[in-house]
Length: 281
Image 1 (cartoon, rainbow, N blue to C red):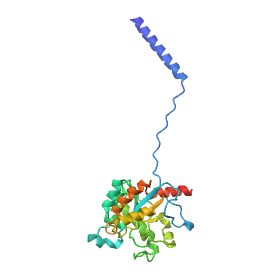
Image 2: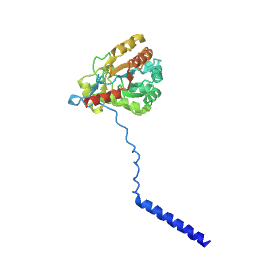
Image 3: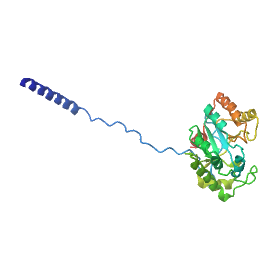
Image 4: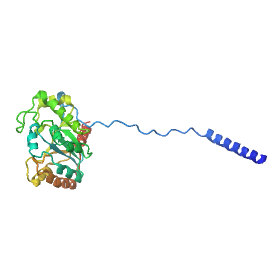
């Protein structure tokens, strides 16, 4: 019995010695790469201020870019149209949004703050859907220049506040990350308007393709106008307002497959602005 114990002790000692030797001959193990630390989300791409620090204006990406196109939809509602909405006029267009989702088309929705207040559930749903991005179309949809399609005109000293009021309306209804992009009501702007918005830090987004859907009733005519105008990097302006643009949803169902057959990829405005910034850099 004593002999067996001695043998076991000897075996254990030998094993310990061999282990120690092997350990001494090895380099210390290097720690593996640490997991990447969480980083803050990147800021949306914007353009640098224009001459004299004026608000920059974006119309389309450089033509040498890929065959991409951004469909944009103005969710218009002027501040004084509340009684018309209360009487049953529809300034929203849920069927259009459903069609974009069904076709898996990314899009940028330029929303007025008044529209977001009238349709908070829809504004929140659009804003939380990664397929879309929400941008600013003013709070009141009043014009930033005189003589703009009959719209009431904002005085210059209220322009910035109107834009910021729209962002406040988006936050209130639960739009999490509205983009720092602004579209002038009616597309009307001048140097004074660009100067007034400089402190807001937005990029003004216009377009190079007019869809012609406002008050149009023929979806084929709207589709043809878009298809004839699109070029690589184009921004198309359409509307997300049922009463003022009743043909838009049917036009989109024709526009999307035809442009895809031509090799176009649909993107949000932010991707086009990023491409423009890269090209300029």
